[in-house]
Image (cartoon, rainbow, N blue to C red; front, side, top):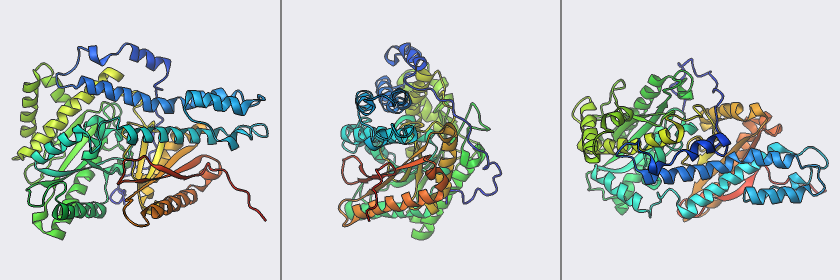
Amino acid sequence: MAFRNLARNNELSRGPTAPRKRYMNSPEFQKTLSHWDITTSLDQHPLTDVDENNHLKEYEQQVKGRFDKIIPVLKTISALQHEQDFVDRAQQIFRTEMGYELPVDVLEKAWICPLDMRALFAWCVFQSHKQASDQFFESDPLNGSEASQEARIFQSFLNQCGFHLLDITPCSDGRLAHSIAYALRIPFSAVRRRSHAGALFDIENTVNRWVKTEHRRYREGVPNSAETPTRYLKVVNYHFSSLDPSHQGCAAHGSDDSLAASEGLQRLLDFREAVEKSFCCGASVELLLIGIDTDTDAIRVHTPTNSSEMMLDKWISALDLYEETKSLPKDQALERINQRVHESAPGEADKGMVAFITRMIANNISQIDYVRQLHGGSYPDVGHAERFIGVGIGFKEVHLRNLTYFSHLDTVEEGSPDLDVGIKIFKGLNVSKDLPIPVVVRFDYSGGVPGARERAIADCVRVDNAISSRYRDLVEDGLLHTFLTIRDRDQKAPAEVVGSSLDPQLQEEH
């Protein structure tokens, strides 16, 4: 349970602050972009990957642009709802501007009653998500699939560092949804990611995933043989705010940075103890604690010793190293970072861990420049500005900041703390503006397992019913809509839509 150890924190009752969101297709934003060209910027670090920054910028603009066009285009058709040819004109506008059509059953009621803009808004969010999801699995826009050269190179590097699997738990806060592909620049297929509120992962489930990993090494030699002296690396990625630390930190920890770090470390230590007590000390895992500033994307790393000892009040800052090494040649900058990482450990540090942290900081330097050159140093939406809530198991395709609030769960009852935080956030983001909360339910399954697809559909329906029951008032007021999807994790194909609260209601026959 995500909030198991947080009852003593009296700051949990604080609600999220209203976001300061800048639409990416707004004149102000486009004016900013017109004066920014990464390829010609002289004020950047020698370790910054200019080409990758440009590529990531284009992807972010494209995907978020779909969502940010929704309200302006809906306003356009709202003004036409009493025209004689309204349905045809509305569909033509959406085909041209958005690449999809609106539900006819909603449009055709416009002559009887006011157009249901809440339903149309939710529909557009769901369709925009589907477009982005389809693109992700069909064309690998982030170059991070298992078949990509980037993933193979990183997996080889990981093995050289002495690790056979990287398992990262970020907070479910949407401001960390991009932490893998952007902030740390890790190919998504080379890391196991499960988000939880406060980055407080479920220990029992993580032990089970560790068991499956080690079992596969013994049975199949994947990702390497069991005789290879490598370890399972578990990372907690907590977050904080440098601009507004008292209000824009982790909501699950009441914006208490010290609590976020300490609870994350304790969860790591409990996980290692669970593995060692269940499978003896020879089955040890490696641990790492990383903090990320959600305003600048700069990370700080609590470098561990050989025995995974970390100090909460001692870390190495990527932002400090950025300034220290920006005037050095690339090779010297990397050497300096490696030296500083080694010195930051509270005792003797493992060389492989030092090499891994050095690479994460070097990667993060590119992201620091990305935020500086695109946003002037810090994001304009310092608070929450997510577009939808993702519920269930999956969402490998979501790697953009403030796009999705994650609530990984098997049941709403067990995952209610994570989901309740998301609903609370969206009451401020959407409900306060009379817009509905869009919830995408996803369950991945293994297509080779008999009946797995049918069970995934049943899981979607079960969770959908539980959401409708838990947030009945929102549902009845049209302020919460759901979109049910499943995906075969053994295939490269996109997710499959299996239902929605916006599906036409069939009339009962007598």
